[in-house]
Length: 172
Image (cartoon, rainbow, N blue to C red; front, top):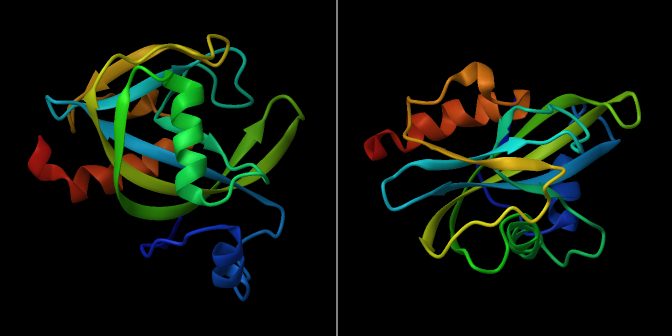
């Protein structure tokens, strides 16, 4: 479900924004994700590994959970980029795209989890992607808009992929 298109800076701003929203569970987690385009305008996806809490073997973009220690969402995203692809990849965060809300089933804790995804667009300027979390990432796959099999995408990625595909259709 789409939430908003205006960027919020941190957890305080997000909480204020959601304060009166009755549709969102108060027990949500926040994830920052980035749709990274390479020099050929292909989106870089990662194949989720067996160590992931949900949606194992599905395609997902780079990113992850915001931690309490993260100062703001962009620093959380920069941290996640380094944790997942290493320091050899120069990924530039270009713009905020959208926020969405979704539920996933957490296999580790055997329960449903509510997620707010804050989605950014970025580009791979230079360097190579490394697999820094081999239990969570089996490898990277690149697809132009319209080329990926949407059944291979995680549930959280399906809705966002449609939004990104429409917004950046000129990158086909």
